[in-house]
Image (tube, rainbow, N blue to C red; front, side):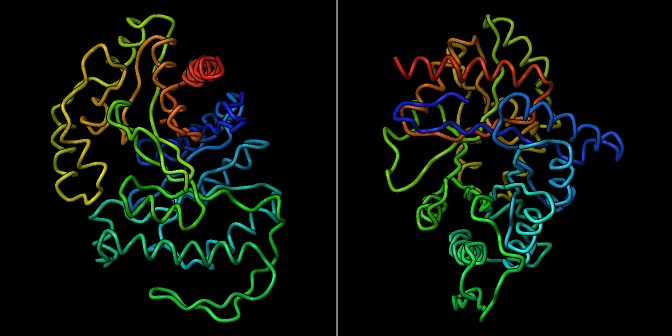
Length: 338
């Protein structure tokens, strides 16, 4: 992967398809091929997200590890699903069995109905306080050394030691998912990368806080010409009244700051590559950048200039998608270097 200005590496992640959309055998094949596309396309890793309706992300990550040589699963980790010791134990078990590094995407919330079903009524900002405690215990366990003692508001452990120890070179990268002030503050306190759901560049902050690393989640559909790119985008994500109603219902029960803010925004003009239709029609949970290579690269270049160094792309529709995204990032980095 090319280097950004100031020698800051760009990390590109794809996203694993959800299990809810395919039958068992077809899903295994799809995960395997998407993982291989991602590795061949130069991705650092692949996001494997979690909610009550889809398969366990750790087991899906095992499929990905077995199908690739170096691709790192970025595993969504929700405190309500497992004790922090369990997460650390799984990470070191992957390292021991496969000699592979993982990334952890620490998630404070999720679908509101999922949390209610699990009897988690913790308020939004308090969930980030809990996430900081949770992640701190995981990090200390994975760092090795003396047994871990920790006494917080949400968790308490005494003389807890992780075996087998994790090799230092396989310590996972830590991301915190969340665009709210509480989410960014949690990332900063943990020394983690704050992952935001991107806004149109003119609505982004003029500069990002130097106390944290930042990344964004965004889909990309780019081709040599803008007309071709927009034709593919509209064919892939047609407007759907049922999807719009599902989206509206989901937003009513969501306490995600970013989802609510994005849902209230008007569509961008056709001159802008920033496109909300897939999100508004409940086809995916991130905005898209659509247009010619040059126009989308220009937009990506603005995010680079703001300080974003990690990009999590949406689920690729085909291997071709990652090739075209690669063209965009190469042009964006070349433009930034100039």
